[in-house]
Image (cartoon, rainbow, N blue to C red; front, side, top):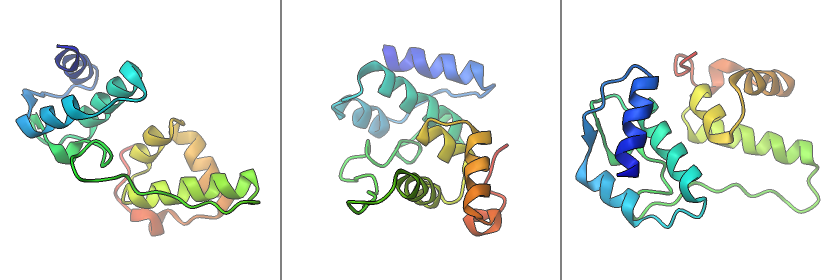
Length: 137
């Protein structure tokens, strides 16, 4: 019930026509432990609605960590790395994991797109390297 409510809310908010959730995706959502509780579920459903290219949310619309048998990519930050180095690695590797999609990367990281753009400028990251045309500004 909560999932359907979130789908409806975010579909309306984003002007998308989402008719429902594929049974496999629904099963994955029900089976996940949700360590972040309702807020994590809400963010996951919002992301799925925004990223869905069809009227039905599928497993592919869910984060890898939610999908059965898949784990989210991890980042190794060496002990002694500065906070700035750690932040750079997290941002760049998350951008890479999202195929250069800056909007999705900012959403996953919980930061604004302007903040992400500013950080990428600081790093001298070339937007073309990250996946031109994949940003939904």
